[in-house]
Amino acid sequence: MFSEQIGSETTHSVPVLPELPAEYLDARWYAVYTNPRHEKRVERQMYHRGVECFLPVYKSVRRWKDRRKELELPLFPGYVFVHLALKDRLRILQLPGVIEFVSCGARPAALPESEIEALRNGLHYACAQPYSYLRLGRRVRVHSGPVAGLEGILIRKKDKLRVVVSIELIHRSIAVEVDEDAIEPIQR
Image 1 (cartoon, helix red, strand yellow):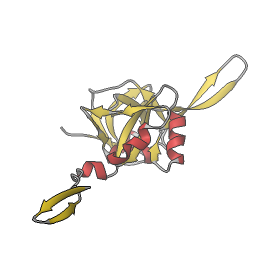
Image 2 (cartoon, rainbow, N blue to C red):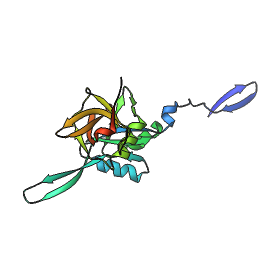
Image 3 (cartoon, one colour):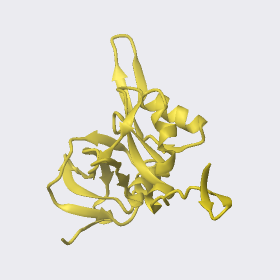
Image 4 (spheres, rainbow, N blue to C red):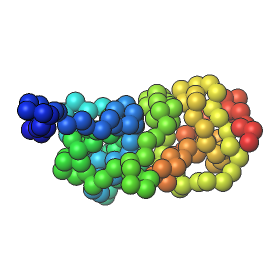
């Protein structure tokens, strides 16, 4: 306890703690880097601790000589998305399988809420697959359908149109099939 002598009386003062910035108190989406092939385990641990998290997956059929099996694989291998205030990040960093938060400089970098919500809403209905990371190309926005709100780069594969959605922070992309009348070009 701190004490100060004023005249002949002794008073006790409480140390003043610095106020945390809003980014440490407000819950935002962050990407957490995991050990290879530990994404599902990390997601389960977060879920059991009551932490909101998101692990986008896709279905892939694998064939062996004697059987076929449908697997659920992470769309972004090595990453799990978590929604929390930065003041609580130690709870996540202590989990087995978690390496670190994806950071920009010394601070964990927040992801745009719109990107995560569009992914969460749209992936239940759309068939998404991992794709090579793209930066350049014709930018479009999906204005209707299950993945409405997603922005990405338009590509044509065989007779189908796909929008390649890139998460800039982790340099990963996915491709989602769309109808031609569901997209509009983005003017820069």
